[in-house]
Amino acid sequence: MSKITLKNVVKRYDSSVAVREMSLEIEDGEFLALLGPSGCGKTTTLRMIAGFIEVSDGRIFFADQDVTDLPANRRNTGMVFQGFALFPHMTAAQNVAYGLEMRRVPKAETKERVAKVLDLVQLGGFAERMPRQLSGGQQQRVALARALVINPHVLLLDEPLSALDAKLRHEVRLQIRQLQQSLGLTTIFVTHDQEEALSLADRLVVMNAGRIEQIGSPADLYERPASPFVADFIGKTNFFKGTMTGDMFSTDFGLSLKVAPRVAAATLLGVRPEKIKIAKRSEAGPAGQGDINAIDGVVELVSYLGPSTEYCVRISGDHRVLVQQSNRVAAEGLEVGQPAVLTIPPEWCFMFKADANADDLKAVRPG
Image (cartoon, rainbow, N blue to C red):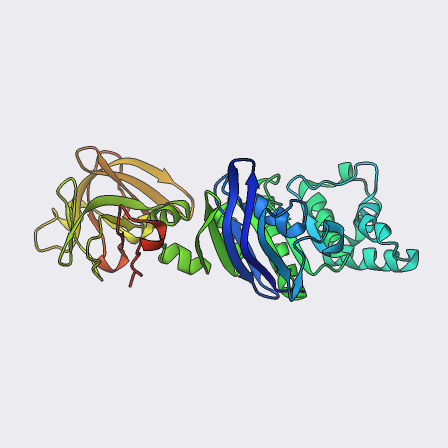
């Protein structure tokens, strides 16, 4: 187990910069997710930590050891790849044993460690099966066992669940999290799937164009996004452009919303779909001047999502708002074409100062 420190790490490819001045500390035993869209630099960062890609500038430390110039095979990291990368001509046990054989671990010890780690990933009875005889989830667990059997200082996961179907992804990510917690292993997980990152990680690092946009707990990033990019990338957000006057935000299309707390000079307001209340207009009555942030609209689309229902509501001209309601409390009978009243609680709005650099963007903590 090891603390990892990146100090001003840069990766250049000719005139292109993939990672820009990245500084980051990952605590011993922490589960950290690198999250962002394709091309943001997250996989490049992971591969620099693993030693597969050379650093252009900056330094990487495992605990107090500078590993920047250390080859990958001397860093003692366990890597799980996106495509499993199992040898098709080897059994599960042989695949797991491969790294130990390369390290010239005695055969008796190798056999014992392989059996132990296969039991750990609940594949004790599958040691002699070939990869083609295993399901996708079982193959992924073999790949995980192969990474764990060498007793790595750091576990590196490069989008390891992307080849699995939705149900298997959920099952395997729970197993990965339980294993990581039981072993206390420093783990870095690369993904573009926000749900995976929110459910697995102690902290998230959201990257954009080679830079860190925000670092924090899943709740921090979801409830208190530091930039419009983070608000848009983590979950869904309704955005309104406009201007602040006192504690009122006036949208560009004439809607006035009370916000709390206020942010002087804010020109962009965001609110999550599930924070907005929705009711049939016949029940709530038309939105009046005395109602705080009550908005008249017409339902244009209804999407049943299982745990929740999502409504697309046209509120003014071509302006539309997404609203999500739990199916425990969803307004019954809301259908396409039906008038509705939306209510946006002031305390759940977050605002940004537009036309600012990323460092100057200010978001407001809801509540």
